[in-house]
Image (cartoon, rainbow, N blue to C red):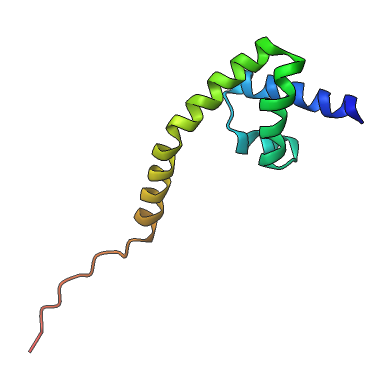
Length: 94
């Protein structure tokens, strides 16, 4: 089982490094939790493949620094899609 976990950690590292993927995207792609991805790429990968770990760490740091911007953009889009259409003026008000 240890081999499987190590292989998954390496596969996750390669995927994140190649795609510039977020932890969430990698978790969805591999069918594991975000916690598992994070544990694999920050803990296990560091001992298995230090050069790959360094590449992944840079990408994770970039994603972390940008996440507040992505969150703000998502909120903006959410409320933009919820806006009511403007009403037409009513001419015959008494």
